[in-house]
Length: 429
Image (cartoon, rainbow, N blue to C red):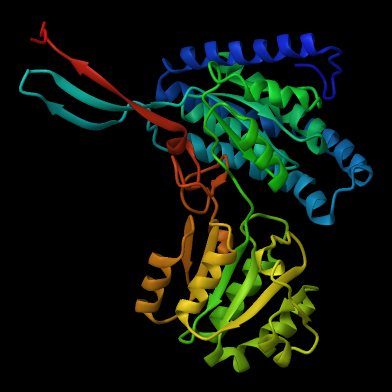
């Protein structure tokens, strides 16, 4: 594994490099499919241990990325996502360990039947094969993605952003040491070690070697991947997440959920970006939540009804309601009904995570069934849309697609199925 930003001079050299990555990943995926659940779990536990042992090296590498961050024009929220400390490295290792404890879905018999011909037909869960994962400045995602891929029997090619190049290289080095020690095929985890953007396009064209691509980052990245990929794309799109405070909401619960959803960590995809308040509780709720958001340094852009109650709010544009701010800003609107809230979410949301706060079970059910989103939270913060919090261990992303997976994508979501048909000499007449 070379150091980050290795120059690769010519298009011919880049093409050979990409074909080598993809061919080695394909060979590793075929070999990995034969390993037992326990072998994969041992490897994951070794990965966690290797990450812990490598903490000083990982933090030293991360410090280089942080120093370079300002020159790359990263926002404070992006730098926060990039920054590692001992606690965050431990969280990375613990996330890998959590994946090791999950059930292995590979080999699961989904359906089984015996046909009149005597043939036994079994539908078996199998790995996807080779995953090309493109992501931006989140070094923890490097380990999460590798863990989920190994747990599900897939080889993975990691293409991290240049913002976290040193961090990702150090994490992958620790992971590959564990893979070697565990006896799994080394090339089941590979890191693209050049920042050249041409490499992405070359790999996106290799549909005979790569089975699926998963982009996780900004809207421009996702759109580029969707336009160029020849293989299926599993999209982790933007997170314009909503909290709707219903007329039957417990006001204190609504306050707590809103502040947690928006302020607990603002630069992540499951942070709330929009607050909707039923008109019947607006006069009671808005002054309280407005002042608390102000204390947290959150700027408010809002509709006219909200601005009347909160004079320090700025009148929102239509685009504001569709924006993922990833920072100290939130859009707020007063709605006349539950159905108006549902309509607003479906119009402006990104199908990521949307929450309702209510004591009315019928309202909760109507919201849950009619909002077009991957994850609905009822009386809970949007921040719980997370693989670990939902029992999946580490995740490779939160899919805003509907096919073939939706919501947090753990090991099960990186599988497909095939049919195995067993006979005793049957021929078809």
